Amino acid sequence: MSTRVGGRPDLRSPRRENYLTFGAPSIGEAEIEEVVDSLRSGWIGTGPKVGRFEELMREYTGARFAIALHSCTAALHLSLVASGLGEGDEVITTPMTFCATVNAILHTGATPVLVDCDRDTQLIDPQRIADAVTSRTRAILPVHLAGRIADLDAIHSIAMRHDLGVIEDAAHALEGRHRGRKIGSVSDLTCFSFYVTKNMTTGEGGMVTTDDPDAAARIKMYGLHGMDRDAWKRYSDNGYRHYEVHFPGFKYNMMDIQAAIGLHQLPRLPAWMGRREEIWRRYDEAFASLPVVRPAPADPENTHARHLYTLMIEPERAGITRDEFMMRLHEMGIGTGVHYRALHLHAYYRERWGYRPEDFPNATWISERTVSLPLSPSLTDEDVDDVIHAVQRALGGAR
Ligand SMILES: Cc1ncc(COP(=O)(O)O)c(C=O)c1O
Image (tube, rainbow, N blue to C red; front, side, top):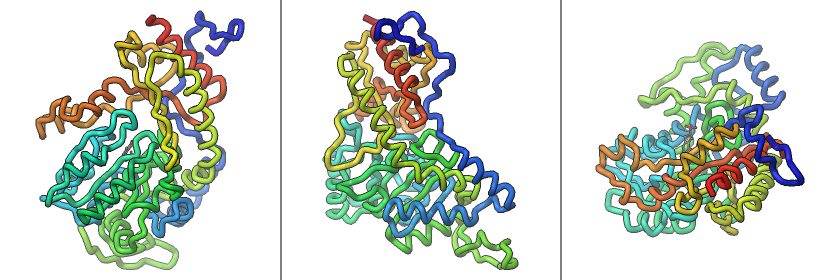
């Protein structure tokens, strides 16, 4: 693709030679060498590189503590467990998220209480949070969907009024800021993901940041079977040391092999963010005249982490459904994603709580229309041209 005729896209050569995979990671030689170094050292489990990665995350977010885990799902689960949540407690969150957000609540025994999101920002609606608070509510779990920061001022003020914890699902918002403060240093606990499609990766991986020393100590311990501090060192060259189990914990620790990748990804975030911004601007300009809804403008109070660039494909305007649009892009060699089909539409939650699509009309509306385009710093200018032309062609073909 990418061939141009007289400055306009060549509509006759629609398929790329190489498929543009959605969310492909950017892995450099430094990451590869660091992983090899771990493999050669013999220390491939939790070790010094995890410690260095946690230190980098503390510096990056400004939080006092950072605990590396093997996923954001683990980070969410342990944050909720460390907050003392369990049966009889309620946690308010959004249906417009990945299933891990709500599953983590369920695994503590607590009850997730879903409230609808705003249709434009796609973020949890604070008014609906306020309306959903009961005597059983213990925490609010906002999700910074696509990298857009939830209304943390309103959320914190509801939390203060009712003495609730705030645990942020910042899987999409590593580079985000709220009123200049880095995400990770704003709420009680913040959970990040380093899954392959995220703005930086460790293969699989997650992190909790917090200023609370007790929560940090509990999360560290619960993440490694509930064994006492530094139990991971029991086989080190200081000789064997006995450990003590204080809690029936989980096996959620990050490995040095994962941290080895993260150590070289994290310092690249500022440059990568610049490239994401650039691609974002190009998409915004190119799609301005198309019959699609583009992402809402960024909130000036916050820094958008530019994780996902999503279009809303309204069949009435676009002439095709979202799924047809995705198929057309796929046929042109462009991978896309859906973030998300809201949780109340999925079998388990629908059947367990009897949810209907109209219970969360905005989340349902988004679920049926949203599509995420490739947005990665590893995209070349040519790749970006290809995506733009494919979108134009997919919609143009429908007219
Ligand atoms: C919003 C959100 N929350 C949580 C998760 C879970 O992250 P992980 O895959 O690191 O467990 C994801 C991952 O896709 C996500 O997008």
